[in-house]
Image (tube, rainbow, N blue to C red):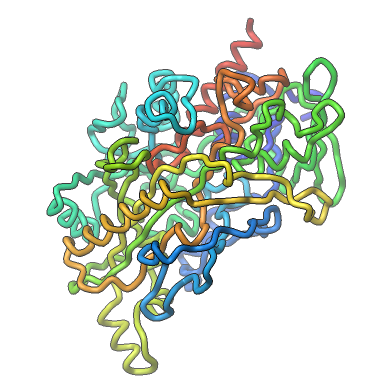
Length: 552
């Protein structure tokens, strides 16, 4: 495929880049995808069938070298009950300031979907009008009904399994896959939820409950976060990108790190400079789509400043890097007196949406959701039990392991993250090996966020107690530890060029052939929804608009 014949260049191969690559290549566009990370071969790279199964996701690229985290806020003794701790090791953060555990993502073909748990959520329609209804964040410049057909399309491509009804998110058709059965441990948790008068239902997951071509159905091993060797999890590489390649119109170049976007006259983008195998290269881009995520996308735009854009590319509003929204969560882990076999089953097979609406938590703006979190807490194997659950040594330790393994229950709450002036992405004075400035993450957990965390902490503890847990041995909190997977908001989408970076079709307000299709365009985060499916829906909608523009 000749580089002169590409109609579209896409930077990033995760949810936004992969979905757009498929949607445009099947419409006849010649598409090039540039991905900074390598290819992963599920059957070879994911070791769940070997004695090495309990090791973390097998990163092939150092994910920490592209960003720094600024010094975080001082901690207040008023909120000591929201500190992270473990019964063997004490406080997980022993300092008097919030510390960073990092931004957790994957550099690779398929992006962070390679190690996600498969959660595939639609956004609550009420979360799309946060400014109009509550005076915070910003409104989405579209309605839920505008996105609904694209949600349906995305669910079909990745194979989402879900419940028969969803009272919070109207649907035009059923989920394409039957909901997964709850594990025994999740059934015990459900009893606890119900005792408290809380509803809980099967989670919507991009995990096959029945086999498809080239993809098996789930075997409930619980190893989703370590990569899925069976391909039953609907990661972007085995769904959208696989389909895109089959069109014959898509090429994927892995290990290609984009360093700068070059602008041209007449408010257009000329192309991108990228590094491949140690060599700096340039490729022209009739249409450029950036899909690097809410930290790497603003980094690239700010690093691409020139005489036409002295403050950063597409930053005429000054909003690139602003409005950063991070993962805010609370987790409580405890031991149940009965042997539950809780290391087995899908990691997040059930979910409670009772407090998902923006006004569902009394006295607080911004909702949340609750669900099981054993896999996210890494409590599915003996190593974690040996180091975090049981104490002692030798024979006594072995006996405690036998008595505790499979007894753990875990509940997590994830809540709305609202923008504040102190939480943003800028460029650091430090640079990577190629001389590109690192992204600098600044974060502040403000009072409203603390109140959401406090609400979730009490609910998680109450749910475990109602489920029969007699010993809570560990809790993790975003109050004293920055640790994010779901990040958004740094290139806000909106109708007003003075307050946003891209328009309702994800096109730059100024640059006519530049689009952004990742979570950085989100005006609000939602009350705990996983962002992947919404990114895909936005990308598919943008692709339709690009195709319609060419035909006009």
